[in-house]
Length: 377
View 1 (cartoon, one colour):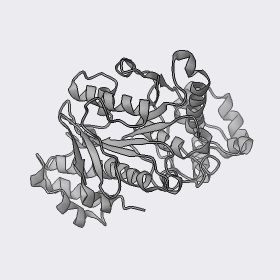
View 2: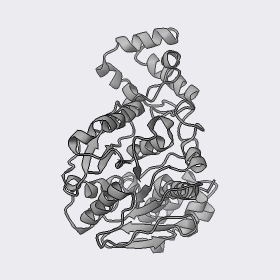
View 3: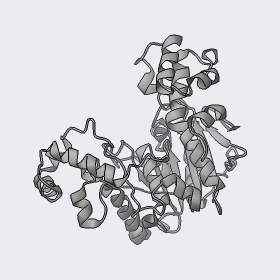
View 4: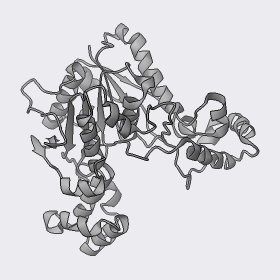
């Protein structure tokens, strides 16, 4: 049976691998969910730790790779096929999938990947030296003093409970994936994928109103506020962006703002990742989606797709989404069983599948805005 290996989100700081996989199991998948170290316990870089092992800051990432190697060794005992392993993740879990695609340390442990609501963009993973500097600041807050070796000894003598309660505010960069040159061939995830391709078939997509929970009922719903926030967030682009999100094209100004912020934070980066992966030499098929099915006043907010995928929502759109993912895990192609045909994405056609109340093919979603917000490279 095909295997689905889930990596949860939570910004590398929170979350759990505990899921209810019955909807996917019912479609013939063996589902594995990995628990990995979080926060400082999983992503603290420090010069003293680097001196011991040539790198630091990605202990949680190594946990994911260890999980995949466990699957490789053992999943046959559960009826799983080691040649049909799909890794999939949401939010920061999707960022981890990006990193696994580009890391030679994970090569050969999976055969397809689904990236849900995130992409690792150029410069998003900090240089190791910067992460080490942030680690030294973190250690001083424990407080641990002295040189690098003394700080590491102090950190190890501190309880895990105390470590997780150390304030993280103001750490630059924050505790996230570092992914230095010891783990990637070019030191940059997107450029690695552009250079060598993803190596496996991909599903990649995002939700239409990713940022609704950050703005709905949080800021005034009027045109002036919409313009002020866009001008503050995108000072060099606002003049060109605002005409692309006309207020009269949305239910109210707040939804125009949510569209801009969702595109900037998720949609356009996902589109560029799909373009890069699809245009690489020897590229495998890439299937892009846009999730638009809403359940409440926040509409298709960040993470809602997971409720449909794991069967927390029991309706026709959820069943269709589960079917696409299950077929993709089994064959590397989500099509079949009479479902709406999902065409592969290319930079030229910009096709995507809308997973909404009605499943349908679309093309060119907010392309003009995305060309400004996340230019091709």
